Image (cartoon, rainbow, N blue to C red; front, side, top):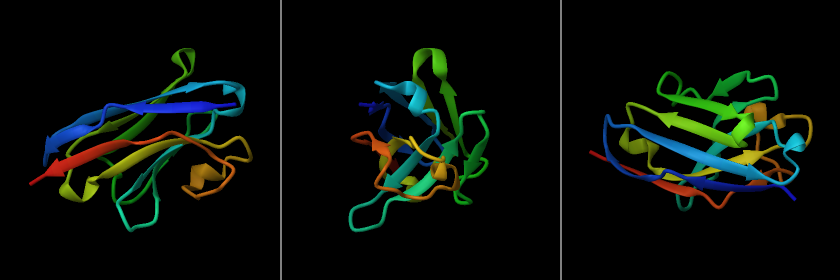
Length: 125
């Protein structure tokens, strides 16, 4: 089964940068539609960015121009480069893989996705 493991989270001051990584293992040929989601306690998990099998990308309006999603298929690794971070970016970030029709590209949530365990990002004022 596909497994995803995130890393790279931490604490950073507003305006700073972080790069998150997500290593994907298993049946990676079914995991080339990927996304990053984030969630604060008590809130719904929301989509941040997504990338499809042809490397097309989409972003939530709140992060457009500041965050960049990318994937290195040779390394089976998904990335989220985070620049100009704001306190409202504070959340636990999860990477995901969609084995289906890439609904994840529209930042939709689905029980059919494969999920990582998440990595915490904290942005201080």
